[in-house]
Length: 201
Image (cartoon, rainbow, N blue to C red; front, top):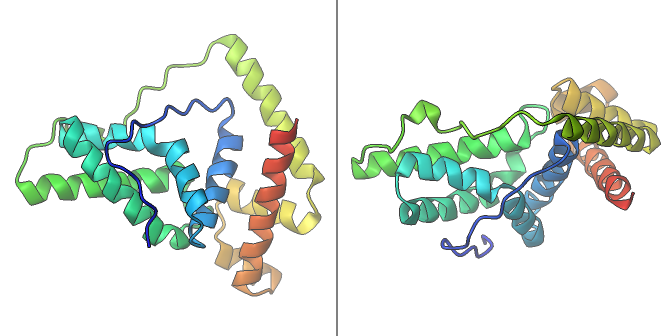
């Protein structure tokens, strides 16, 4: 059963200071959502609703319709999160594709004309960071890598290979000669430890 998300809820704004940290956090939340963890779905919503609402609004053209579609987007995420694999795509790209497709389906079902060209739907304002922001991001990126180095070897290698080399869980499991479920558990535990290290400083 999907978690209840009111369609008129005002999306929160996510401004992560470090993309790598945010990606690991979101991936971990998606993995838990795939295990039917309602609190994880709420975390995914908190982290991504602003961007996904923007996609829906661009395509649908009005706020009310975009809110309705956004509700459907998170119902879809609840059902499909178990299929997410970090090695195939970044978490936000995977989620944005769902939002885009649901919004396009809404437009087509009503014979409506999208507010903006559909190919622009994934474009979100992303101004270049100033020098101070870049320095802060570099420092936090180094902290993330330090936390990665602190993980046990199996988790560290699996996370680095999945996130930086684009290797799927199935490919990782085959390389290591272990069951797919075991590999997913290794990565999930590693992401939890990584999040604790990053957040604990």
